[in-house]
Length: 115
Image (tube, rainbow, N blue to C red; front, top):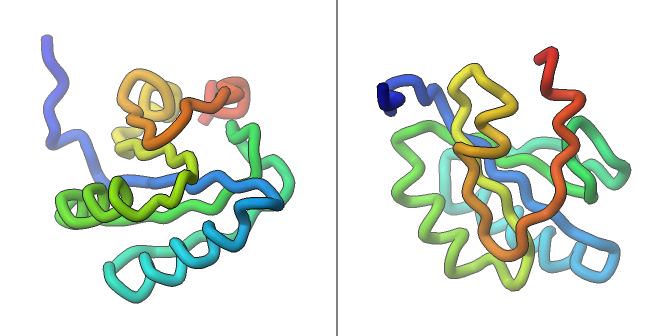
């Protein structure tokens, strides 16, 4: 049986950066906050949760997807971004339900397995 999109409560975009790309990540973050109704998460310079590179999270409502995603596609400036729905299944959301802008990075699923 197919999953229903009604299972999606919101979305997250995880913007990954390195020391050499942090300035691009800052610019992207500033523009996201100015243009859209999103919640900007903290900067994580050290690894957190399933993420294997420094990142910050951008949370947004289902209704914002059609505006936020195309803008990210055109303005990511070479940054790698994981976009996933929040359905209540954290492992599936970060893997089979996820989409990547740029390169797919490794995800450490262990922290998600008991989430």
